[in-house]
Image (cartoon, rainbow, N blue to C red; front, side):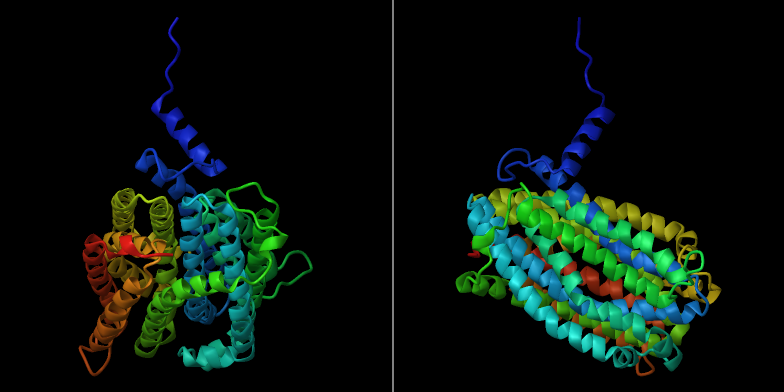
Length: 474
C-alpha cells in the first residue's frame, strides 16, 4: 500500500511552522534558500509588528477630535524618534554582526559576552537622550515645525515617548542579539507580545472604558511605552533563562573593554549611517510642514506610516541576509555569504513589487482607514502613490546595506547614505519644493524620495559586487 505523499500546502505549512517555532540549525551549510526563508519568515513578522506600533497609534488618534493636530503630533514625534531608532539600529546591527561571527565560529560564550557589552553601552546612551527629550519636548515639536495648537496638545505625548527611549533601544538591541544568534523566532515573539499589549491598551487609555474617560492623545504614548516595556521584560527573561543559541549568565555581567571597543567600532559608523538618513527624513518632514502647513504634514505623516508598515517587513527579509553574511564569514564561507545576499535581494524585490502594485492601484481605501479628514486623505494618497514608485529599489537597497552591516563593514553604507541623502536627496527636495526652486511644495518632497532612494540602491549594489566586505575582520 502506497504512503500518501504530502501536498504542497502541507509542505508549506510544515515549513512555516518550523520557522515560527524557531528550529535551531546550522546556517553555514545546506540549502541557502531554506536558510534564507527560515530566518526571513520570523524576521518579516517581527518587523511587521514593529511597524504596527505606529499604525495603531495613528489609527486611534486619527479618529480623535482635532485629528489634524493629533496626527501631526504622532508623525513629528516619530520623525524625531528616528534618531533613537538610528542609535538602536546601529547598536543592534553591531550586536548582530559580532554575535553572528562568534556563532559562526562556534563560540557561544564569546557571543554572550558581546551581547552583554552591547546592552551596557545602550543603557548609557539612552540615559542622556531620555532626559533631554523629557525636558525639552515642547521645543522639539516647535523645531519640527508644529504650530502652537499642536504643541499645546502634543507636548505630554512627546515627553512620554522621548522619556521612554530606553525601552525602544533595548527592544531593538536585544532582538539584534537574538537575530545574530539565529534565534529569529524569539525576536519575533517579543514584538508580538509588545504589540498585543499595545493594541489592548491603546483604545482603553485613549478613549477610556466605562467610567474611565481615557487620556486622549497622551494615552497612546502611555500604551506604547508600556507595551514595549513588557516586550523588553520578555526578552530579558529568555536571554538569561532561555535555551536558545545564546544565553547570558552571571559571568557575562561584567565590562569587557576589548569587546566594548569592538562593538563601539562597528556601531559608531553604523549609528552614524542611520542618523544621516534619519536627519534627512526629519528635514523632509519639516520642509513638508513649512511648504504645506499642518494639513500637508498630517497627510505626509499618514502616508509615511503606511509606507513604513511595508518597508519594515522588507527590512526583516534583509536582516536574514545580514545574519547569513555574519555567520558564513565567521565559518569561512564568503561565497555562500554572497549567494545568500543575492537570493535574499531577489525575494525582497518580488515582495516590494507586489506591494507597489497594491499602493498604486488602491491607495484611497488604505489611507481612509487611518484618517477621517478629506484634505489629509488627499495629500496622503498623492504621497503614497509617488513614494511607492521606488519600492522595488528600496527592497534591494535594504538587502545590500544589511549585507555590509552584517559583515561588519559599516563604513561603506555610511558613506553611501551621506552622499545619497545629503548630497542628493535633501538638495533635490529643496529645489523641487521651495520658492527658490520649482515651487512644487510637498509634491516636490514626495518626488525626491524615490529618485534618491533609487540612486542609493544602484550605488550600494555596485560596491557590494566589488566585494571589499568579504575581507572585514570582526
